[in-house]
Image 1 (cartoon, one colour):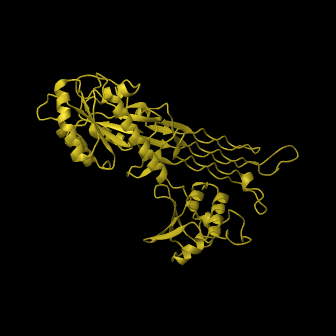
Image 2 (tube, rainbow, N blue to C red):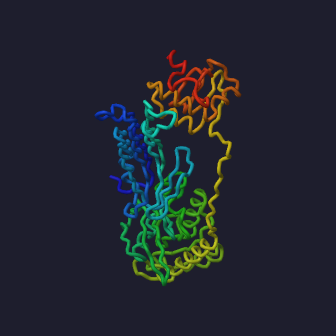
Image 3 (cartoon, rainbow, N blue to C red):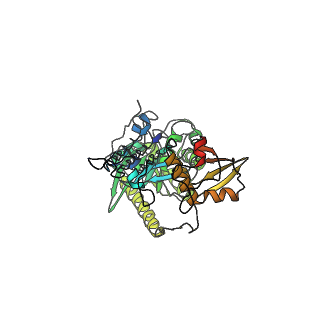
Length: 453
């Protein structure tokens, strides 16, 4: 059974807001004491949060559906409904959140960093909150808004300063174990490393992390072997270290061809050409391997300009020079990143004063009203209540929807659509609504259209 997952899909569904309450206060000698309906509670959010105690996306892989609770409805006596609890989904540091189209929505770095995957709906207002001088006793309340939902792709990209790359059984896991306190699985057969391992290394005053990436083989960038699954874990590394097996007995392999093969896969994957490289020629405790390392060291340095280190993870030789060389590269990279960082400037673009927040778009013989506020108002309306429908008409008229429909050429009886395609309200428009007039020519809820429904 898998114990490490670095890619998962989460189906996040937030809770709906609770409905507002339409209630009238009643007590002895006060049969009509005024509206006292409370507001509905807010639906719960689904929140991704970075937790250092979480090392993989295994739990999300096992339980991909996360749904928050709904807000409670309001009650009489001005009692508001309770807000629903948020659903907290812990994710490891370095998780990248994308939508189904591959657009990056968030890069979660830093313990406690949050990303709201799905927003809970707001609770509907009770009739007490809807009362005013003109509407002293509303006989309706607003419905709670539905929560949002999203299908998100989560990918874990390990946060490491140095990435170890090389063929299977080159000694990457052994190098992590001798440089740090990490204890990855080590054996003399290929692909013993099935998941990336992190080790914390200290060299002088510099502390950095080293990632042991599962072995690469030719064709890894096209999905062969394990490389494609784990190449993403070296995208954040400041430097790459080629760990080369100088004692291999496989035909057709030597240090130079191994480096060329790995570099070809890194180039095919892309985005790693600017990373500094170091070369660790491993297993030099074997005499033949030590002689081969001596032969190729100068050639690698002359042709590529990369520092080369002869090491043995078994004999623990040559490790300190390599450790301090890694620390030096990491320190230089960190200084450059600090110098390149620019203060974050928050750009605020306020909406124009006359921005009505909606658009009327002709669609054949129909007219679709697009806008956050009209769509929200429609979702909050109880269409079984005539007074609530009149209140919606009043809001739309004040917003300017009536005037805009006339400008777009709408005629009495035209089909008007408000809201999203999946949850829209369709009606035949009659420009005889009186709700938008300054003093109202008819009581609320007595629109002539309602008598025909």
